[in-house]
Amino acid sequence: MRELGLKARKAAGVLALASTAQKNAALNAMAKAIRASSNKIIAVNQSDVEAAKKKNLKDSFIDRLTLDADRVEAMAKGLEDIAGLPDPVGTTLSEWTRPNGMKISRVRVPIGVIGIIFESRPNVAADAGALCMKSGNAAILRGGSDGFQSSTLIVEALRQGLEAAGLPAAAIQMAPTTDRASVGEMLSGLGGTIDLIVPRGGKSLVARVQAEARVPVFSHLEGICHVYVDKSANPEMAREIVLNSKLRRTGVCGSAETILIDRAAAKTNLAPIIRTLIDAGCEVRGDAEARAADARVKPAREEDWSTEYLDSIVSLAVVNGVDEAMAHIAKYGSQHTDAIIADDEKTAQKFLSEVDSAIVLHNASTQFADGGEFGFGAEIGIATGKLHARGPVGLEQLATFKYQVRGSGQIRP
Image (cartoon, rainbow, N blue to C red):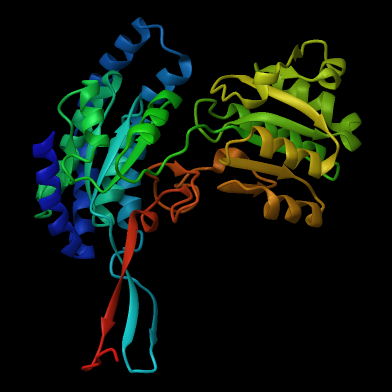
């Protein structure tokens, strides 16, 4: 593992000076290599999936692990999309001249070496490796045991792309082991070679990373996302957005886990929304008013309001307007993604301004909490902290900055 770190540090120095054209050539070559290896990747992935099924892992886990022709093509297309994005490295963020004549510029530069620790999603290897490389960073990827074979093949294709463009293959490396000790070594910083850790996985992994990391971390612990249906909401829009927010893909961190409905419009919204969810195969756990509206609703326990189900289960409560909805979100939410459905612009703006989450939406599904949907090309993850990277972490968020100061002989008195 230490050898990986040393190789990555050396490669990061090369990437930091690589031209945009060279990095884009590598990304396009990576996409070509992914497509050329598609059948092999899918075959190996099927082996990973079968092994996971024998362990009786959750359906949401199996879904995240599974690759098919469409998902492999989406992976390759994502690499090409990243090639088409502006290169953040070298961008001048601001500049000014001091009274003594010194000219100061704040310029974006790469972070250095980024460690990505992920579990079931082999496509993370492609997204993370590509985003790190385009932003001038070297990447050390440590995948989970369940998708290890799939991820390893994907990384091989990425390294082929790097070499085809004349860049060091060590700019993207896969940890050769799934031993848990390798995670501990990465969290320690690999002898000072890792500058940032990004975990992608379940709560236990992220909690361990947050507790043990000796280097900065971009992460979110949970995605307890809410949809609040205001009294001014269009009922049909409300039903469609709630359904999509919860059930489009239940295993993603932007899936809604709690629905809050304004009591002032419960007569028109409550029963139809519950019926829409249950008829679509979603279990609803609700408060007394929700249970009164539909006998199929199960009683919600206190812990349901703070549970990330990642499954076809949702908690539902009736609240007294936007203020009570925001109070509920502040108490039980995870500052990830929350949405309001409302035609009243004043109420919507209040929600957007006052809900302290990384992503806040108006009249749109929480499933848009995704770097690709934000126009970032892809994302390395979603961060809910308060540092410079908040929400989807894309190219710009994987760069830091430095000050370049140009003088003409000034000395400080």
